[in-house]
Amino acid sequence: MSDGNRTSSGPGANGRGGMGPPAGESSARRGRAGSLLKKADGLLMAAAGEPDPRECFRTAYLAALRGAGAVLAFTGADTAPRARSRNAWVLLQRAAPEFVMWADYFSAHSELRAALEAGLDREIGRPEAVEFHSRVGAFLHDVEDLLASAARLRPAPGWTGGMSA
Image (cartoon, rainbow, N blue to C red; front, side, top):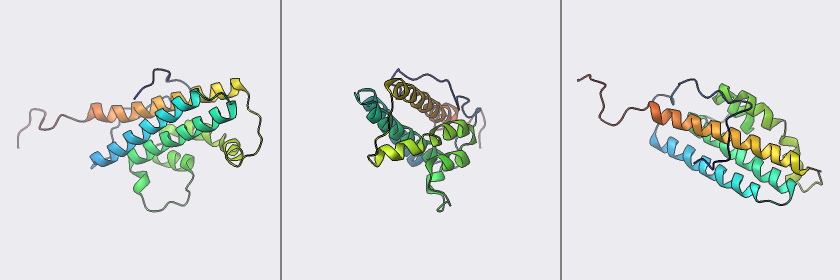
């Protein structure tokens, strides 16, 4: 899934501390999370090719939202009964506290993203767009690490660890 441009630094680069997915996790949940992460990667790559810094920022923000969706799908928070908040960043904080710094970072950029979506003229310079793009890449790397750590912790089918029934 990695596009080679991501680095694991910045807010939330702490991973899950060895915790795997919740008990009873279904392969459908892992598949949905992986699919959302793949979409996020595609959006991030599209953002990199945008000549307009505002469009680069807007598309990178959408990639971050897909990354948040991947975490929510992975933790099962996307199937929980209707939560009070529908804000992805609030839901991310509740579902995966290790991502709280990322949620705060992206939440702080929500107003700018909403203004751009509404067609309002907001000035974003190339350096600001590039920095934001880089942070989204680091966030997606952390999401990828979360999904991969669960895969590494899962035993191979049929493996009993030396125990027999």
